[in-house]
Length: 455
Image: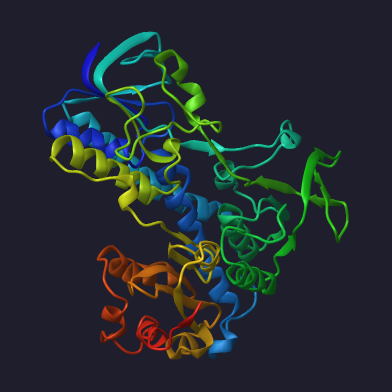
Protein backbone atom coordinates (compact mmCIF):
# COMPACT_ATOMS: atom_id res chain seq x y z
CA UNK A 1 0.00 0.00 0.00
CA UNK A 2 1.42 3.36 -1.02
CA UNK A 3 0.78 6.59 0.87
CA UNK A 4 2.04 10.14 0.67
CA UNK A 5 2.93 9.96 4.35
CA UNK A 6 3.06 7.39 7.14
CA UNK A 7 2.72 8.55 10.73
CA UNK A 8 3.66 6.03 13.42
CA UNK A 9 1.92 7.05 16.63
CA UNK A 10 -1.12 9.27 17.23
CA UNK A 11 0.26 11.40 20.06
CA UNK A 12 0.48 15.16 20.41
CA UNK A 13 2.66 15.49 17.30
CA UNK A 14 1.35 12.67 15.12
CA UNK A 15 -2.36 13.38 15.39
CA UNK A 16 -2.34 17.08 14.37
CA UNK A 17 0.17 16.28 11.64
CA UNK A 18 -2.21 13.69 10.18
CA UNK A 19 -5.01 16.22 9.93
CA UNK A 20 -2.70 18.91 8.52
CA UNK A 21 -1.45 16.58 5.80
CA UNK A 22 -4.99 15.45 5.05
CA UNK A 23 -6.11 19.07 4.70
CA UNK A 24 -3.50 19.42 1.97
CA UNK A 25 -4.95 16.44 0.13
CA UNK A 26 -2.21 14.00 1.14
CA UNK A 27 -3.00 10.30 1.55
CA UNK A 28 -2.00 9.49 5.12
CA UNK A 29 -1.58 6.22 7.04
CA UNK A 30 -1.87 6.79 10.80
CA UNK A 31 -0.58 3.78 12.73
CA UNK A 32 -1.39 3.36 16.43
CA UNK A 33 -0.55 0.33 18.57
CA UNK A 34 -2.52 1.19 21.71
CA UNK A 35 -4.23 4.48 22.63
CA UNK A 36 -5.58 6.89 20.05
CA UNK A 37 -4.32 10.27 21.25
CA UNK A 38 -1.11 9.00 22.84
CA UNK A 39 0.24 9.26 26.38
CA UNK A 40 -0.87 12.77 27.30
CA UNK A 41 -4.53 12.25 26.61
CA UNK A 42 -4.88 8.68 27.87
CA UNK A 43 -2.39 8.09 30.69
CA UNK A 44 -0.52 11.39 31.15
CA UNK A 45 -1.57 15.01 31.46
CA UNK A 46 -5.35 14.73 31.13
CA UNK A 47 -5.97 11.92 33.64
CA UNK A 48 -3.38 13.01 36.19
CA UNK A 49 -4.62 16.60 36.25
CA UNK A 50 -8.17 15.41 36.88
CA UNK A 51 -6.78 13.52 39.86
CA UNK A 52 -4.82 16.60 40.98
CA UNK A 53 -8.09 18.57 40.91
CA UNK A 54 -9.82 15.97 43.09
CA UNK A 55 -6.88 15.96 45.48
CA UNK A 56 -7.09 19.74 45.77
CA UNK A 57 -10.80 19.55 46.61
CA UNK A 58 -9.95 16.98 49.27
CA UNK A 59 -7.26 19.27 50.67
CA UNK A 60 -9.64 22.25 50.75
CA UNK A 61 -12.28 20.19 52.53
CA UNK A 62 -9.84 19.23 55.26
CA UNK A 63 -8.10 22.59 55.65
CA UNK A 64 -10.83 25.22 55.74
CA UNK A 65 -10.32 26.21 59.37
CA UNK A 66 -7.37 28.49 58.62
CA UNK A 67 -9.65 30.61 56.40
CA UNK A 68 -12.50 30.61 58.91
CA UNK A 69 -14.47 27.84 57.21
CA UNK A 70 -15.53 25.05 59.54
CA UNK A 71 -16.22 21.84 57.63
CA UNK A 72 -17.68 18.85 59.55
CA UNK A 73 -15.33 15.90 59.87
CA UNK A 74 -15.91 12.83 57.80
CA UNK A 75 -14.69 13.87 54.37
CA UNK A 76 -13.79 10.77 52.38
CA UNK A 77 -12.71 10.02 48.84
CA UNK A 78 -14.45 7.75 46.36
CA UNK A 79 -11.59 6.70 44.09
CA UNK A 80 -14.01 4.89 41.81
CA UNK A 81 -15.83 8.14 41.06
CA UNK A 82 -12.54 9.98 40.55
CA UNK A 83 -11.57 7.30 38.02
CA UNK A 84 -14.99 7.47 36.37
CA UNK A 85 -14.70 11.22 35.86
CA UNK A 86 -11.23 10.75 34.39
CA UNK A 87 -12.44 8.01 32.06
CA UNK A 88 -15.34 10.15 30.84
CA UNK A 89 -13.06 13.08 30.05
CA UNK A 90 -10.69 10.85 28.11
CA UNK A 91 -13.50 9.06 26.26
CA UNK A 92 -15.01 12.32 25.09
CA UNK A 93 -11.71 13.45 23.60
CA UNK A 94 -10.81 10.07 22.09
CA UNK A 95 -14.29 9.63 20.59
CA UNK A 96 -14.06 13.09 19.01
CA UNK A 97 -10.66 12.27 17.57
CA UNK A 98 -11.80 8.88 16.26
CA UNK A 99 -14.86 10.45 14.67
CA UNK A 100 -12.72 13.08 12.94
CA UNK A 101 -10.39 10.42 11.56
CA UNK A 102 -13.23 8.18 10.40
CA UNK A 103 -14.88 11.03 8.50
CA UNK A 104 -11.62 12.13 6.86
CA UNK A 105 -11.26 10.41 3.50
CA UNK A 106 -7.52 11.14 3.37
CA UNK A 107 -6.59 9.38 6.66
CA UNK A 108 -6.43 5.61 7.08
CA UNK A 109 -6.17 4.51 10.72
CA UNK A 110 -4.32 1.22 11.17
CA UNK A 111 -4.11 -0.49 14.58
CA UNK A 112 -0.90 -2.42 15.18
CA UNK A 113 2.87 -2.21 15.68
CA UNK A 114 4.90 -0.80 12.79
CA UNK A 115 8.25 -2.38 11.94
CA UNK A 116 10.61 -0.99 9.31
CA UNK A 117 11.47 -3.34 6.45
CA UNK A 118 13.54 -0.73 4.58
CA UNK A 119 14.09 3.04 4.68
CA UNK A 120 10.61 4.01 3.50
CA UNK A 121 8.56 0.86 4.11
CA UNK A 122 6.98 -0.50 7.28
CA UNK A 123 5.17 -3.73 8.05
CA UNK A 124 1.98 -3.61 10.13
CA UNK A 125 0.08 -6.81 10.86
CA UNK A 126 1.80 -8.53 7.94
CA UNK A 127 0.94 -5.82 5.43
CA UNK A 128 3.56 -3.51 3.92
CA UNK A 129 3.07 0.25 3.68
CA UNK A 130 5.41 2.67 1.94
CA UNK A 131 5.65 6.46 1.68
CA UNK A 132 8.03 9.22 0.71
CA UNK A 133 7.70 10.76 4.16
CA UNK A 134 7.58 8.79 7.41
CA UNK A 135 7.04 10.49 10.77
CA UNK A 136 7.88 8.54 13.93
CA UNK A 137 5.93 9.61 17.03
CA UNK A 138 6.03 6.50 19.19
CA UNK A 139 6.57 8.12 22.59
CA UNK A 140 8.02 6.42 25.65
CA UNK A 141 7.07 4.03 28.45
CA UNK A 142 8.04 3.67 32.11
CA UNK A 143 11.54 2.32 32.78
CA UNK A 144 11.50 -0.62 35.17
CA UNK A 145 14.73 -1.49 37.06
CA UNK A 146 15.78 -5.14 37.05
CA UNK A 147 15.25 -5.50 40.78
CA UNK A 148 11.54 -4.78 40.42
CA UNK A 149 10.69 -6.94 37.43
CA UNK A 150 8.38 -9.79 38.39
CA UNK A 151 6.87 -7.78 41.24
CA UNK A 152 3.26 -6.60 41.14
CA UNK A 153 4.23 -2.93 40.75
CA UNK A 154 2.23 0.03 39.45
CA UNK A 155 3.21 2.52 36.74
CA UNK A 156 1.82 5.96 35.95
CA UNK A 157 -0.65 4.13 33.70
CA UNK A 158 -1.85 1.25 35.86
CA UNK A 159 -2.20 3.35 39.02
CA UNK A 160 -4.92 5.31 37.23
CA UNK A 161 -6.99 2.12 36.99
CA UNK A 162 -7.22 1.57 40.76
CA UNK A 163 -10.70 1.82 42.22
CA UNK A 164 -9.71 1.37 45.84
CA UNK A 165 -7.30 3.59 47.73
CA UNK A 166 -3.88 2.10 48.56
CA UNK A 167 -3.32 1.78 52.30
CA UNK A 168 0.40 2.55 51.95
CA UNK A 169 1.76 3.63 48.59
CA UNK A 170 5.54 3.34 48.21
CA UNK A 171 6.84 5.43 45.32
CA UNK A 172 10.26 4.63 43.89
CA UNK A 173 11.51 7.84 42.32
CA UNK A 174 11.40 11.36 43.72
CA UNK A 175 11.07 13.26 40.48
CA UNK A 176 8.15 14.92 38.71
CA UNK A 177 5.84 11.92 38.23
CA UNK A 178 6.53 10.49 41.66
CA UNK A 179 5.93 13.80 43.43
CA UNK A 180 2.63 14.49 41.70
CA UNK A 181 1.25 11.04 42.51
CA UNK A 182 2.72 11.21 46.00
CA UNK A 183 0.95 14.39 46.98
CA UNK A 184 -2.36 13.48 45.35
CA UNK A 185 -2.59 10.04 46.99
CA UNK A 186 -1.56 11.45 50.36
CA UNK A 187 -4.36 13.95 50.02
CA UNK A 188 -6.71 11.16 49.00
CA UNK A 189 -5.90 9.46 52.31
CA UNK A 190 -3.13 6.94 51.59
CA UNK A 191 0.06 6.73 53.59
CA UNK A 192 2.83 7.66 51.15
CA UNK A 193 6.58 7.03 51.22
CA UNK A 194 8.80 8.36 48.42
CA UNK A 195 12.19 6.72 47.89
CA UNK A 196 14.87 8.68 46.02
CA UNK A 197 18.40 7.45 45.28
CA UNK A 198 19.87 10.97 45.08
CA UNK A 199 20.52 13.15 48.08
CA UNK A 200 17.42 15.20 47.28
CA UNK A 201 14.26 15.08 45.20
CA UNK A 202 14.16 16.58 41.66
CA UNK A 203 17.92 17.05 41.71
CA UNK A 204 17.87 18.83 38.34
CA UNK A 205 16.22 21.80 40.06
CA UNK A 206 17.96 24.30 42.31
CA UNK A 207 18.42 22.97 45.82
CA UNK A 208 16.08 25.48 47.46
CA UNK A 209 13.31 24.41 45.07
CA UNK A 210 13.77 20.77 46.05
CA UNK A 211 13.86 21.56 49.74
CA UNK A 212 10.78 23.77 49.66
CA UNK A 213 8.67 21.19 47.81
CA UNK A 214 9.80 18.45 50.18
CA UNK A 215 9.03 20.64 53.18
CA UNK A 216 5.49 21.28 51.95
CA UNK A 217 4.84 17.62 51.22
CA UNK A 218 6.29 16.48 54.54
CA UNK A 219 3.97 18.91 56.27
CA UNK A 220 1.09 17.08 54.59
CA UNK A 221 2.40 13.74 55.83
CA UNK A 222 4.44 12.40 52.91
CA UNK A 223 7.55 10.53 54.08
CA UNK A 224 10.82 10.70 52.15
CA UNK A 225 13.84 8.40 52.03
CA UNK A 226 16.74 9.97 50.16
CA UNK A 227 20.25 8.64 49.46
CA UNK A 228 18.56 5.30 48.83
CA UNK A 229 19.58 2.53 46.48
CA UNK A 230 16.57 0.48 45.47
CA UNK A 231 17.74 -3.11 45.60
CA UNK A 232 14.43 -4.75 44.85
CA UNK A 233 11.05 -5.77 46.16
CA UNK A 234 9.21 -8.95 46.99
CA UNK A 235 5.63 -9.89 47.70
CA UNK A 236 4.78 -11.19 51.16
CA UNK A 237 2.26 -13.94 51.86
CA UNK A 238 -0.43 -11.43 52.80
CA UNK A 239 0.00 -9.57 49.50
CA UNK A 240 1.99 -6.73 51.01
CA UNK A 241 5.10 -5.56 49.15
CA UNK A 242 8.44 -5.31 50.89
CA UNK A 243 10.82 -2.83 49.27
CA UNK A 244 14.51 -3.23 50.09
CA UNK A 245 16.56 -0.04 50.25
CA UNK A 246 19.98 1.00 51.42
CA UNK A 247 19.90 4.31 53.24
CA UNK A 248 22.03 6.31 55.60
CA UNK A 249 19.07 6.56 57.95
CA UNK A 250 15.95 4.50 58.49
CA UNK A 251 15.02 0.86 58.26
CA UNK A 252 16.56 -1.17 55.42
CA UNK A 253 13.11 -2.37 54.30
CA UNK A 254 9.74 -0.67 53.87
CA UNK A 255 6.45 -2.57 53.86
CA UNK A 256 3.56 -1.21 51.80
CA UNK A 257 0.37 -2.25 50.08
CA UNK A 258 1.31 -0.84 46.64
CA UNK A 259 4.50 0.17 44.84
CA UNK A 260 4.59 2.80 42.11
CA UNK A 261 7.70 2.79 39.91
CA UNK A 262 8.52 6.31 38.72
CA UNK A 263 12.24 6.32 37.97
CA UNK A 264 12.15 7.57 34.40
CA UNK A 265 11.02 6.58 30.93
CA UNK A 266 12.47 4.75 27.95
CA UNK A 267 11.58 5.36 24.28
CA UNK A 268 9.42 2.87 22.38
CA UNK A 269 11.88 2.83 19.50
CA UNK A 270 12.95 -0.74 20.23
CA UNK A 271 9.68 -1.93 18.69
CA UNK A 272 10.36 -0.41 15.25
CA UNK A 273 13.29 -2.48 13.87
CA UNK A 274 15.09 0.78 13.12
CA UNK A 275 18.30 -1.05 12.30
CA UNK A 276 16.60 -2.45 9.18
CA UNK A 277 16.21 1.07 7.86
CA UNK A 278 19.60 2.22 9.13
CA UNK A 279 18.01 4.86 11.37
CA UNK A 280 20.45 5.90 14.09
CA UNK A 281 19.69 6.08 17.80
CA UNK A 282 21.80 7.08 20.78
CA UNK A 283 22.87 4.70 23.56
CA UNK A 284 19.53 5.14 25.34
CA UNK A 285 17.44 4.38 22.27
CA UNK A 286 16.41 7.92 21.38
CA UNK A 287 16.33 8.60 17.64
CA UNK A 288 19.02 11.03 16.56
CA UNK A 289 17.60 13.99 14.63
CA UNK A 290 18.76 17.27 13.14
CA UNK A 291 17.65 20.68 14.35
CA UNK A 292 14.76 20.27 11.91
CA UNK A 293 13.83 16.82 13.30
CA UNK A 294 15.00 14.75 10.32
CA UNK A 295 16.80 11.47 10.99
CA UNK A 296 19.93 10.36 9.16
CA UNK A 297 17.58 8.82 6.58
CA UNK A 298 16.18 11.47 4.26
CA UNK A 299 12.41 11.89 4.46
CA UNK A 300 12.14 10.13 7.82
CA UNK A 301 11.48 12.31 10.86
CA UNK A 302 11.15 11.67 14.60
CA UNK A 303 8.81 13.74 16.75
CA UNK A 304 7.91 13.83 20.43
CA UNK A 305 9.46 11.93 23.32
CA UNK A 306 11.24 9.37 21.12
CA UNK A 307 13.73 11.94 19.75
CA UNK A 308 15.10 12.93 23.16
CA UNK A 309 14.62 16.64 22.45
CA UNK A 310 11.88 17.09 25.01
CA UNK A 311 9.73 14.97 27.27
CA UNK A 312 6.64 17.15 27.35
CA UNK A 313 3.36 17.47 25.51
CA UNK A 314 4.19 21.06 24.57
CA UNK A 315 7.54 20.09 23.04
CA UNK A 316 5.87 17.27 21.09
CA UNK A 317 3.30 19.68 19.71
CA UNK A 318 6.08 22.14 18.89
CA UNK A 319 7.78 19.35 16.94
CA UNK A 320 4.62 19.15 14.82
CA UNK A 321 4.72 22.92 14.34
CA UNK A 322 8.37 22.75 13.22
CA UNK A 323 7.61 20.00 10.69
CA UNK A 324 4.53 21.78 9.39
CA UNK A 325 6.30 25.13 8.99
CA UNK A 326 9.40 23.73 7.33
CA UNK A 327 7.82 21.20 4.97
CA UNK A 328 4.65 22.99 3.96
CA UNK A 329 4.98 26.71 4.72
CA UNK A 330 8.53 27.52 3.56
CA UNK A 331 9.54 28.11 7.17
CA UNK A 332 12.88 27.71 8.89
CA UNK A 333 11.92 26.72 12.42
CA UNK A 334 14.36 24.74 14.58
CA UNK A 335 14.31 22.79 17.80
CA UNK A 336 17.06 25.04 19.14
CA UNK A 337 14.75 28.05 18.84
CA UNK A 338 12.64 26.97 21.80
CA UNK A 339 13.25 27.85 25.41
CA UNK A 340 13.05 25.05 27.95
CA UNK A 341 9.87 25.39 29.98
CA UNK A 342 7.69 23.05 32.03
CA UNK A 343 5.58 22.76 35.13
CA UNK A 344 5.53 20.49 38.15
CA UNK A 345 1.91 20.16 39.17
CA UNK A 346 2.23 19.63 42.86
CA UNK A 347 0.59 22.16 45.16
CA UNK A 348 1.95 24.82 45.15
CA UNK A 349 2.86 24.32 41.49
CA UNK A 350 6.27 25.00 39.98
CA UNK A 351 6.65 26.92 36.73
CA UNK A 352 10.10 26.87 35.13
CA UNK A 353 11.64 28.58 32.11
CA UNK A 354 15.23 28.76 30.84
CA UNK A 355 18.22 27.94 33.02
CA UNK A 356 18.44 27.39 36.77
CA UNK A 357 20.56 29.47 39.12
CA UNK A 358 23.00 26.56 39.48
CA UNK A 359 23.36 26.26 35.72
CA UNK A 360 24.08 29.98 35.44
CA UNK A 361 26.78 29.72 38.09
CA UNK A 362 28.28 26.57 36.58
CA UNK A 363 28.60 28.45 33.28
CA UNK A 364 30.26 31.40 35.07
CA UNK A 365 27.68 33.79 33.65
CA UNK A 366 27.64 37.40 34.79
CA UNK A 367 24.12 37.55 36.14
CA UNK A 368 21.72 39.58 38.23
CA UNK A 369 19.09 37.83 40.34
CA UNK A 370 15.70 38.96 41.55
CA UNK A 371 14.00 37.07 44.36
CA UNK A 372 10.70 37.37 46.17
CA UNK A 373 9.37 35.08 48.86
CA UNK A 374 5.67 34.25 48.55
CA UNK A 375 5.25 35.21 52.18
CA UNK A 376 5.89 38.81 51.08
CA UNK A 377 3.20 38.81 48.39
CA UNK A 378 -0.16 40.19 49.50
CA UNK A 379 -2.34 38.05 47.22
CA UNK A 380 -0.59 34.88 48.39
CA UNK A 381 -1.21 35.89 52.00
CA UNK A 382 -4.86 36.67 51.26
CA UNK A 383 -5.28 33.23 49.70
CA UNK A 384 -3.50 31.60 52.66
CA UNK A 385 -0.99 30.05 50.25
CA UNK A 386 2.41 31.49 51.09
CA UNK A 387 4.70 28.54 50.33
CA UNK A 388 7.37 29.07 47.69
CA UNK A 389 9.10 31.97 45.97
CA UNK A 390 9.78 33.67 42.63
CA UNK A 391 13.29 33.98 41.16
CA UNK A 392 14.34 35.62 37.91
CA UNK A 393 17.86 35.41 36.43
CA UNK A 394 19.04 38.25 34.17
CA UNK A 395 22.12 38.57 31.97
CA UNK A 396 23.90 41.65 33.33
CA UNK A 397 25.24 42.79 29.96
CA UNK A 398 22.31 42.14 27.61
CA UNK A 399 19.58 42.68 30.24
CA UNK A 400 17.77 39.64 28.85
CA UNK A 401 16.04 37.15 31.13
CA UNK A 402 17.93 33.84 31.14
CA UNK A 403 15.71 31.85 33.44
CA UNK A 404 12.88 32.00 35.94
CA UNK A 405 11.39 29.91 38.71
CA UNK A 406 7.89 30.50 40.02
CA UNK A 407 7.20 28.11 42.87
CA UNK A 408 3.94 29.12 44.47
CA UNK A 409 0.26 29.72 43.95
CA UNK A 410 -0.39 30.17 40.22
CA UNK A 411 3.21 29.43 39.32
CA UNK A 412 2.29 27.11 36.45
CA UNK A 413 0.38 29.97 34.79
CA UNK A 414 2.53 32.94 35.83
CA UNK A 415 5.65 31.51 34.18
CA UNK A 416 4.14 32.18 30.74
CA UNK A 417 4.25 35.95 31.28
CA UNK A 418 8.00 35.76 31.84
CA UNK A 419 8.42 33.34 28.96
CA UNK A 420 6.79 35.84 26.59
CA UNK A 421 9.46 38.41 27.42
CA UNK A 422 12.18 35.81 26.91
CA UNK A 423 10.86 34.82 23.48
CA UNK A 424 10.62 38.45 22.53
CA UNK A 425 14.32 38.88 23.30
CA UNK A 426 13.37 41.93 25.34
CA UNK A 427 15.15 43.60 28.21
CA UNK A 428 13.87 42.70 31.66
CA UNK A 429 13.06 46.40 32.04
CA UNK A 430 10.04 45.93 29.76
CA UNK A 431 8.31 43.85 32.41
CA UNK A 432 9.93 45.78 35.27
CA UNK A 433 8.38 49.02 34.05
CA UNK A 434 5.00 47.49 33.19
CA UNK A 435 1.80 48.05 35.14
CA UNK A 436 0.03 44.89 36.31
CA UNK A 437 -3.40 44.43 37.94
CA UNK A 438 -3.71 44.46 41.71
CA UNK A 439 -4.12 42.31 43.71
CA UNK A 440 -2.29 39.51 41.91
CA UNK A 441 0.81 37.43 42.44
CA UNK A 442 2.15 38.54 39.05
CA UNK A 443 2.26 42.21 40.05
CA UNK A 444 5.24 41.49 42.30
CA UNK A 445 7.46 40.42 39.39
CA UNK A 446 8.21 44.07 38.46
CA UNK A 447 8.93 44.73 42.13
CA UNK A 448 11.51 41.96 42.39
CA UNK A 449 13.09 43.16 39.13
CA UNK A 450 13.61 46.59 40.68
CA UNK A 451 16.05 45.17 43.21
CA UNK A 452 18.32 42.82 41.27
CA UNK A 453 21.51 41.68 42.95
CA UNK A 454 24.66 40.03 41.58
CA UNK A 455 24.24 36.26 41.36
